[in-house]
Picture (cartoon, rainbow, N blue to C red):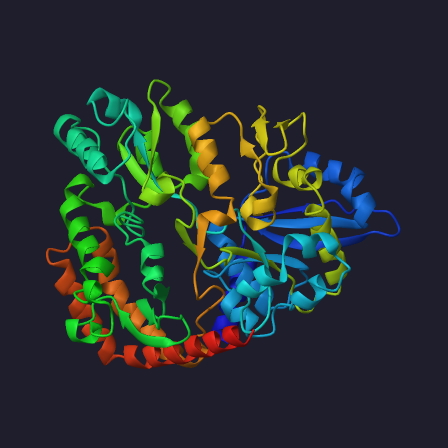
Length: 523
């Protein structure tokens, strides 16, 4: 009852929702579908919808009623709406939101048979059966995978290239190695009293810096997975069954089944934790309480930060406006990615974002017709994602564009992202363009043997919750480099985890992965 009262109170006080309904002028044979989308309504959205009504709505008979919800409130809004079976026909969800829970509770509609029915040929062409299967939850595809590329983006460091040039670091300021990056940080630390060398946030810490190459691990039949906590799954030489699973911070004795070079844990996690501790001299003392790092750069307070290349365009625009006399540099962290080699990035072919149809919707056909229209061709897709050609953007060939001076910015991650429908900003540096093209190529990825596997924690939630509390007690400190003896601290924490159910989680993970691999082998 307290849960219901709390949710009801949230609905009453909810003030971050903006509704856009374009159903007033609908023709007799049109259907209006309701969408729940994250973020603020894009500036100029009414113009785009008017254009859509002239084109897409005439073809599909589908009009849109979109409810935009501030990102900070979206999780709660989605929770309330789906538990209350509110009248929505398409909603945004994600693995880090509710898809795992709602897919097991009958909240969402299975999509694989609908898409393969032949009634929606553009969806079937864009989202293959294989791709859909990689994005199954609880045995079905409960959400259309929305992905810009086949990974979480190219990890990189954004840095003050003008300062790298000033101190003679790299070739004309271009950083291409950890050693050059360290020299850059040292130069800032020694000479720029008002600038923090590396800006980090409490929840991310050092983020993707110093991580072990997961492709190299996979070729040694080791897969890094989140299984109640960060785990390393050792498969046999044919990737057919689990030999063992160990967690970060295990004793050396528990590592016996792993190849010799991994048995002391240094290559898996130990060296990284020690390096983070050493590099903590480059970050501000109170980094654990920092919530935003990028604005440290644009405010002139930091010289670098870690992110992905996905955000490059917006960062470059903001940087140029904030620091017109400075220069933004990009250091691609992974050596093989920097050299644009094939199979340089491990992928599970799983999307970080999905769009789902609530199981009670009576308009699934209209929703799928609308989605089929989006992915029919680039003209349709680009109208929603980029705006009106000639007003918001201009085409440069088939795969690039130049943004015009408007403020229309659609959150593509929530509806339109797909590797086959990407236009690259032609105004950015040619080298960055090459990387953005490279990450769209499926040949640049190494497919994980566990592609499509998701860990179902339904039966072990009490253990998972207990372990999460224990891990959280040290995670932020370790990732921010504020622990004097990080490796032993992690080992002590792992021992506590085993006292509170980690072995139960491990055995469940072994069972589920073996079942997954058996099913995969039969196929």
